Amino acid sequence: MKKPDKTTDVVEILNHMIRDDDELQEMVAAERENLEVARKIYDLRTAAGLTQSQLAKKVGTTQSVISLLEDANYDGHSMAMLRRIAAALEKRVEIRFLPLKSKLKIA
Image (cartoon, rainbow, N blue to C red; front, side):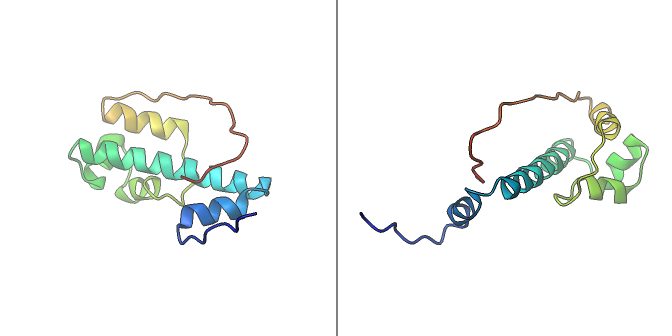
């Protein structure tokens, strides 16, 4: 049997490390979700040409709250706040439920 090639690709390494650990896979999935929400808020705000302070004013909150919401490590996103942000940016929130994959891939 051929020995697998060595890699320095962090995604491949992480996928290998968590492939048999359901708990780690769930943790990675949760962090990915937080990152996705944070990135979407950031992308929408910057596409609208707004600073965090300007968006905060439109939403009725503070710049520090917008900063927290755009932080990938924050996991307190509420539907109410997401709706307020969407309304301020003339958007709507859409939620989808997708099937679980048998094994999580990081990238």
